[in-house]
Image 1 (cartoon, helix red, strand yellow):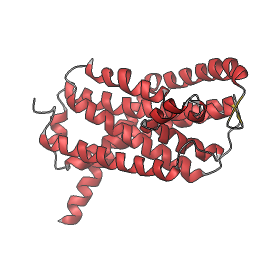
Image 2 (cartoon, helix red, strand yellow; image 1 turned 180 degrees about the horizontal axis):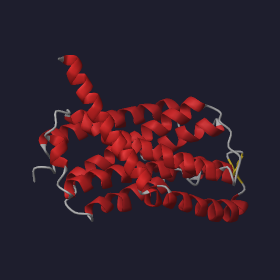
Image 3 (tube, one colour; image 1 turned 90 degrees about the vertical axis):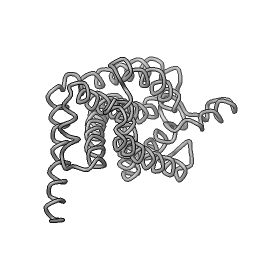
Amino acid sequence: MPESRALTDWIGFKTIIIREFSRIVRIWGQTIVPPAVTATLYFVIFGSLIGRRVGQVGGYDYMQFMAPGIIMMNVIQTSYGNVVSSFFGAKFGKHIEELLVSPLPNWLIVLGYAMGGVLRGVLVGSVVTVISLFFTHLSITHAPAILTAVFLTSFIFALGGFINALFAKNFDQISWFPTFVLTPLTYLGGVFYSVMMLPSWAHMASNANPILYMVSAFRFGFLGTSDVDLRLAYAIMIAAATAMFASAVTLLNRGTGIRD
């Protein structure tokens, strides 16, 4: 009996991930192409044009310094956007009930959607990485830092998208948080600059931005340098992933946004 339940859970979990991946590939014009075009524009405008005036940042060419930030920015936005749109779409279409009455435990439902967001984040991040190679040189200094930082970051924001979708009552409410909170935090998280370039008060304020630690840990994997303590960065990411997952499961168990 336990083996049968484990097999059922695995099939359900795998089905959610396959469905999410199929959705990403099926509408690739909406899921893959826009981030690729946007990243190209960032490299052309900020890297080629403005970068010539900026010069070097932290001993690296500005384009080389900026590239990991652009990659991580797209990972964050697409991981979040994938889950918030997919799960809210299931709520709006009234077919989420079919999943909730299945024998699949809620924590696996949350994990399945989150892994779908991770898949899209990693896929888009890989595409943007390839694009960045046309503009600058990127060498892998610490592969484990790259892999762990991108996984933890995409997992955190995929869970954030899930929680947003639970509370959202209309399509406007799934765009409010990305527009007014997520995007400003991303732009102020060291994507385009080093916090070491900021005045002391702005540097201290930046340390309260969790995205700074994610971008810095990811950039360390390529450049071997970081604006923050990596131990603190990973502690923040692991704590955030754990707290977000626990919160998402608790909210789903309570039926938040589902029974309204």
